[in-house]
Image 1 (cartoon, one colour):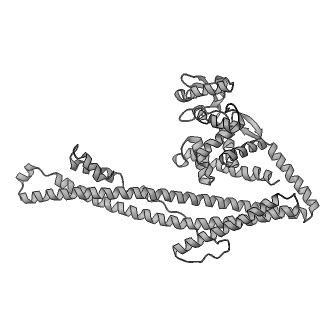
Image 2: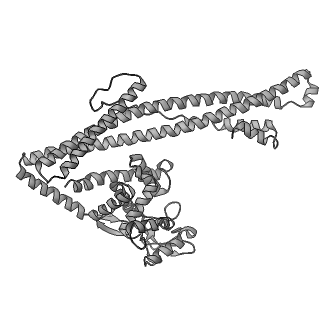
Image 3: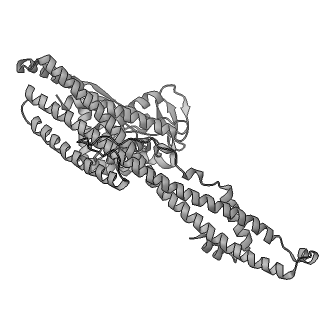
Length: 479
């Protein structure tokens, strides 16, 4: 609804001059929409394309078309090396095969780095356009605010007329009625100006949202480029070490192969801690994560990082037992002290009692999370679901695993539960910003931008995911 329409509706309820002054004062005291103007962004220089022929200068449209064409070319070349790696991996292990795979992975990584740089360059240009559009809208809003301030002063002058003041003044009566006509003109002008401000504000918010989306895309590409650079360095080092250790001899390679296989077996056998559930072998955890990935599309390393983060967080926070189902109070297993807010009574106690009954657990001697600084505790098992959330997913989990009922304290069920929740939180997009934001929501229920505490959690999860991928999953997959 426009401001003019709003005034037409409310005019019969309150004096029109009062409504105008109220709206104007509210807008002017609200600030000049300074928050709508974004901060500056680091300008990323266009990187060379796959064939290093980006022209040094050209018009925006020509540059964008060239960048898009070069990205397409890079993607085609990347697909070629992907196919080569896949075909070589199907061959029996040999020195020549592994060197060919490393060469293809190195070439692919270089192309991926260049493709990301091209896309970043294109996004930088788009961000510049969005910033200019927002600046234009901000200037329009500022100009209208100045006009509205003048209108407000004029309304105050006109609204202060009275019959007594007219009688006591030497003002001509015709001038008084002329001022009344001016008052009507000012009212109309105010309505138009407020409509302009409202439209500009809406357009600015839309452009701001689009700008934030572009910024997230740029962040994702920069992160992906960093990962590709690390992958490239690792593959080049591996190739150098392989050739140095074998000196090109197949017999020596067999010894290197046995060492790789032994390392992969050691990683699989390593214990992976799960909160309130115990430990399982990493190989088993990876199997669960791969199964979840097939069902939900969640990246295995990211899913494993969530559980690693929750396990460490659990050790830092301790756990509690529910003791009073009426109040949700309980005790700390560390100190034995009574603790209130262990579980929210009107939301989680009844579901918790049903869940524990279904899996044959004593509800008053089953570990749940203790309350933190604010809110309630009550999160259960390795995935740390609160009972009221678990019941929303329990049938989905049971159907996916083919079991009669889902158990929060069974590792396989917990992995599947976390996968479904992370998918609903947006992690299935697979980008850095999407996974990080999904982790923040998993922890706090809100996005990273709304909580510095949740943001720290998200950052730690993403760091763990990278470590898990490069030091645990890659060695197993490449053995």
